[in-house]
Amino acid sequence: MIDGIAMTVLLWTLGGFLVGSIPFALILGKLLFKIDIRNWGDGNPGATNLWKARGFGWGVFAFLFDFFKGAFPAWFCFYSLHITDWGIVPICLAPIAGHAFSPFLHFNGGKALATTYGVWTGLTIWEAPLLIIVSVYFFSIFQKVHSWIQMLVMSSLLVYILIRFQNQPFLYPFLAIWLGNLIIVIAKHFAELKCWPQWQPWILKLWKKNP
Image 1: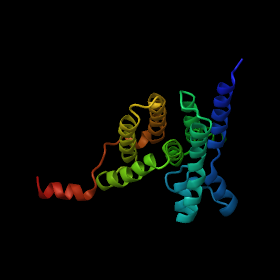
Image 2: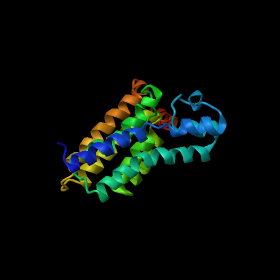
Image 3: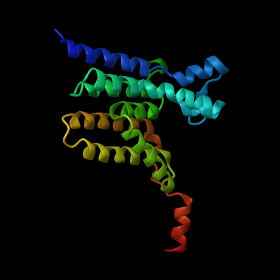
Image 4: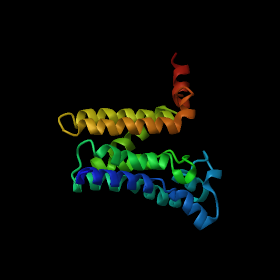
């Protein structure tokens, strides 16, 4: 027999994966504009390509859908249902994995960054998203390759978790969420990560001036 807590974790995990798998940006593009957003940008069915296809406003609208796919289950289960042990791990990873490997798209989904940001917002409210925003801006000043910027942001998130929650009982579940999240992000950015990190042009110019 599965006890009540285990059943709750199972249902939220399955539900999170199912909802996470829904490609809202792709659906919006087809329903409202009769376009396939995978024909724009990097070919992924995410909010960024709806932005490129139909403008910033629609991109933000789709981003919010993908964001809340991760934010709501993480927040509700952690703070309302008080699932703060290992059960929170599959609940948080499910929407990220669903978005990245959607069964509705033959397991070829988006890069899951919006859902990733949503999960960590749900778990930490404002702290992790503020760190992510600052980290993206900071590393973008120096680094040119988007995928490597995401790796640096994930590294910053790890440092934050280790320092912020070092004395909390849910430290190790948070680390497990981070590790699973990292594996998914690497899998979705693997082709771009094959190239070496590239400095922004202004750094190269500065280096040439001051060898």
